[in-house]
Amino acid sequence: IKIYVDKNKNGEFAATDEVLSGSIVLDRLQSINLWVVATASASLQDKQQLNLPIKAVVVEDPNVTATATDSLVAYLPELTASKTVDQETFTPGSGKSYDLNYTLTLENKGSQAIRPTRVFIDGQAQDMVVMVDSLPANTIYKSAQASNPAAQILFKTGENSYSRQQPADLKSINELVVAYPAIAAHAIERVQL
Image 1 (tube, rainbow, N blue to C red):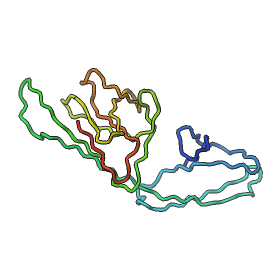
Image 2: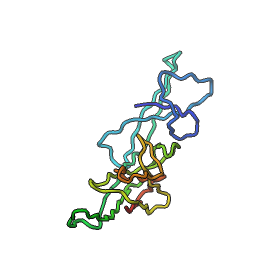
Image 3: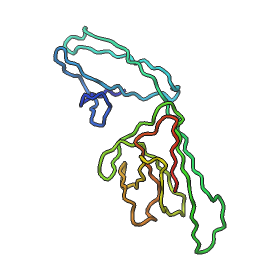
Image 4: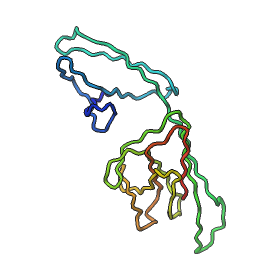
């Protein structure tokens, strides 16, 4: 379990929130928002309620305590990804090229939206849900089109870092990256390439 301090006091967990280490000094009647982050059990069920006991102790007088129970409901993601191709078999020939059209489908079967994570796009931090699919061997990327107008086709430039600018050398592209602001509950997203 890790405890984070809501540094900017906006009630939203953010990358700038700091892990609490040690004690916190508060003035009389002062309050603070904390995030309790814990690793869940693999046996956790969808919509299962969990109760986390919390105890606060006054450093100057350990006999003064307060207890509470923080309850939460766990919503498990249910994502299904599939890839289909228009030509599953063909006879390769020497010096011949074939255009293959793929459809990537990502379905959120869960009852909650898939929330984004922080990535860097063209040097700017953005919160996005990122789908990455490796291109098959001996395949050269040509183009991609997402059915969702809010989706962005990206190209990897580093760890957790992407660009909207397609590289000039198409042979250097070995994976398709599509970023979404979120993926709604029961939504289906498709990408053609």
